[in-house]
Amino acid sequence: MEEIKCKIEQLLLKTQKPARYIGGEHGSVVKDKSKVDVRFAFCFPDIYDVGMSHLGMKILYGLKNSVPNWWCERVFMPDKDFEAHMRENSIPLYALESLDPLTEFDFIGFTLQYELSYTNVLAMLELAGLPVYAKDRKSLTPIIVGGGPCVCNPEPMADFFDLFIIGEGEEVNLELLRLYEKMKPLAPSKEEFLREAAKIEGIYVPSFYDVEYNGDGTVRSVLPNTAQAPAKVRKRIVKDFDSVYYPDSFVVPFTGIVHDRAVIEVLRGCIRGCRFCQAGFIYRPFREKNIDTITEETRCLCEQTGYEEVSLSSLSTSDYTKINELLERLSDYTDEEKINLSLPSLRIDNFSKELIDRIAAVRKSGLTFAPEAGTQRLRDVINKNITEDEIMRTCRLAFDEGYQTVKLYFMLGLPEETMEDVEGIAKLAQDIVDLYYETPKEKRGKSIQVSVSAATFVPKPFTPFEFEPQAAPEEIAKKQKYLLDCINSKKIKCSYHQQNVSILEAVLARGDRRLCRAVYTAWKKGCTLDSWDEHFRFDLWLEAFSECGVDIGFYANRRRSYDEVMPWSHLDYLISKEFLIRENKKAHNAQTTRNCKEGCSGCGVGRNCGGVYCG
Image (tube, rainbow, N blue to C red):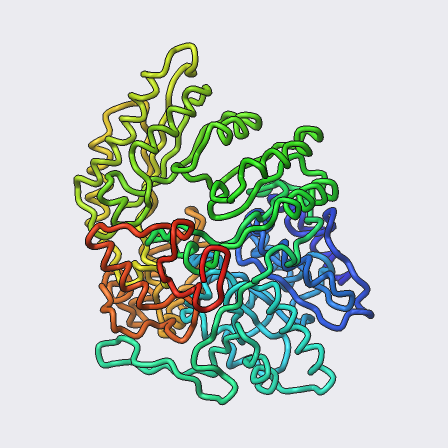
């Protein structure tokens, strides 16, 4: 440790944001190694600024460290400058709390939050001095674990991990580490430990499954090859959301991060059923914390960290059943303590004067909404279930309160999209500009600015659009140009994402195990930090795909039949395939489905596990 620390300290003044690499922050947990039986390195495969903003890391860090003889430490992907220093000075990847190299840990866990972090995982393993392929790591430890939303289809990374945690991690993490603590004195082989781990619900050991393919390249079957592995690995869910562990303190960074504030998770899951939204399906069922729990967690976290802003986290905060009562209770504390209360993830269709007033009490920087599509017909296709009248009503409320900036998120390339739908994006933005100037001068601000952001649609597993092709690059380029041509007002600014990024995301999101070699090859060519524009090298990815015989169109631009075996067919996220097919058919007929509060749509979650609004 002292040798590594000395080397690190000599490099800090040569490094951008040196506080990312030295640890010692308020709230970080340091334990006596002689009293620790299980060590877990929690790795976020992106830079510190992003990883330290991630709520899941904060929860699992606190959870594991609440066990006296376990020690969980944080590890992040170094930025390019510090990675070069590490290699030049023979510094292995280390954990921030102890500065110990990762080879000294029992578990190395990666959270896979987005597909463009995949090569970072390989880079971090290699920086740690470990073989990247699971088959080449013969000893019991370290055990490489993956979790997070991307493991709903982990197959493009299956060759690199010993096991994956499917679903919500709070309970299954404890069970996995307890198993290891129990077996460790027996000195089991890795194979023996993995066989026992596979018996835990929510644990997927990829080496225990064989994949066979049809002549046309589609998957024929994914079947277990050992008795301990279930035919389908069922995701874990936390049923009692009020009693589940939540940290009373966060690690408070010395340097700026993306979201530097206290965060309280108020609900989990979503009632909406937007057909493009993976999170809305894989995090079901919908569960809420009660107001007393939220209030106490807010008070405790703010007092322990000193943060002066707290954000209510969820997929749709305004869907909280008693949102106005919650805000009233919280404001009793936050107003007295002069703490800002932030409300992200708000829905247009249940926006109210009370919510406007609460946001205005914090700041009037602007409002952000996601209509996703420019016409009512296409919003019905994607089951967005908001109308233009609701959009205008919400904007009118905001303008009456003095707001003068609105940001709107849309997607291009959605199923059933036409040029008329693209033009509808520009028309909707212009209608909002016109509405602003209809607001009495004494109420509105000086000028209006509407920002339109248009992402490229990426079909994802466990959604009704998992069967859909991604629009071809030339089609997206045509629609992007047409959208710009349709905007005639200087009050409207339009931006759109790199479509090459979306193409890569689509390939990896629905890929199978044959992509493991392509991920490895891209990494060897120098692809890391792909989610950062300045580092993204699509040309190198294309070279890797070509060398590995990967047809991009097969994964990204091909429609899947309803009876096709998906690469993730052996993983059970409780959403039935029959429901996804039914919703896909309704999409092509522009038919909507009611939300879960209005009545059960039969997605399968209610039958499998129950929930607040299902079963």
